[in-house]
Length: 282
Ligand code: G4P
Image (cartoon, rainbow, N blue to C red; front, side, top):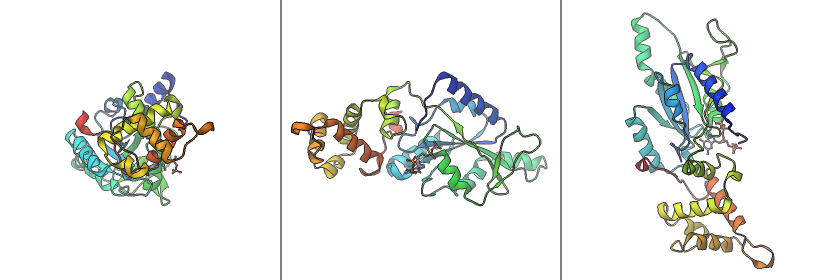
């Protein structure tokens, strides 16, 4: 959460990724299932050119299942292997091992033809901060992991975690920077709580969320806060303030408090499984 990107950070992160790229066969990229495009940095396509690719739609427990299915089709149509995961609960995590094998079929075949046996697939996890990389790695590796340590030919200090006899995982994930220069992307990242709140005004964010929800998830706000969704968005925020008794001194309504409640409840999944972007916008 405490990530702040400066040009120097980006250059360093990119350099580290580039160095590690030489060591791996497959790039496993985590994105947030609620905003799969806004939570990825397209630079990865260039960085991981010529690598096998797997995209994991993580936090799928919080996303709209129908929309997630559309994203699976979308990424498949772009030539990626794709799977959905809930790293927090460990759902879909172990299954990624067989998907990794599947994605690297060509390499295994190539090795076999050259008479190379038992050369493990080497994988790396990457993604923007807060997307769930550490949670995923912990869930995948569990306790029964063996670190393979430094081996000749491997850059000093690199640690590989042996997942099974076929797959080794670089223990430090690659960190990508988000595309925060795009305002819509910034808003979506802030809405899911992935970047600092202070960057954007809470009231404005809540109004944007209200507009999105009334247009795309009719009935959700009414159900939770008993508000008339046909009103304009400022009136709806006012109605939420009334519903939750958000008052300042002198009985004036506290819009910011209401905005915070709405944003918190959205982020905690209390409003339901909601996706903020669909492939159709592409
Ligand atoms: P990072 O390494 O990519 O920076 O992310 P990290 O694993 O630290 O995860 C960031 C937050 O996202 C954590 O929550 C983590 O529990 C949560 N998370 C990761 N994967 C999933 C998932 O599939 N589903 C859900 N619902 N949450 C996920 P936190 O608020 O920092 O901590 P906590 O809530 O676990 O205490």
